[in-house]
Length: 66
Image 1 (cartoon, helix red, strand yellow):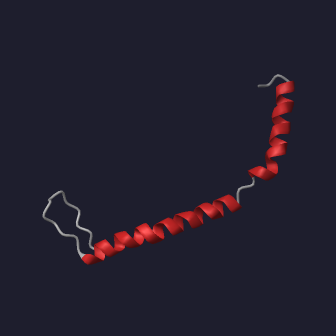
Image 2 (cartoon, rainbow, N blue to C red):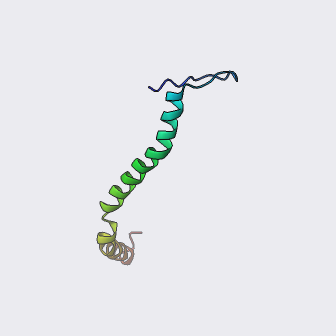
Image 3 (tube, rainbow, N blue to C red):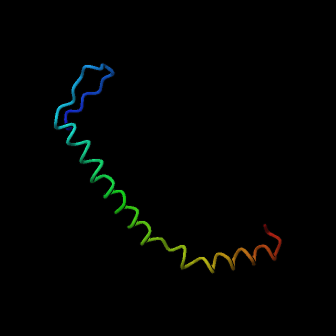
């Protein structure tokens, strides 16, 4: 979308719009990824249900189902 020229030739110069887009992706792409990670971690419920999981596993082990 920014005019990136995909080639293996050594004499190709990327337009400034492509260079600006690459720099923007390195700056803002990381922020977007971190925001997504933070949202996933806030919605992570494993800490709340971990005691129940351990209890269920201990019960299954005592019955010999594992």
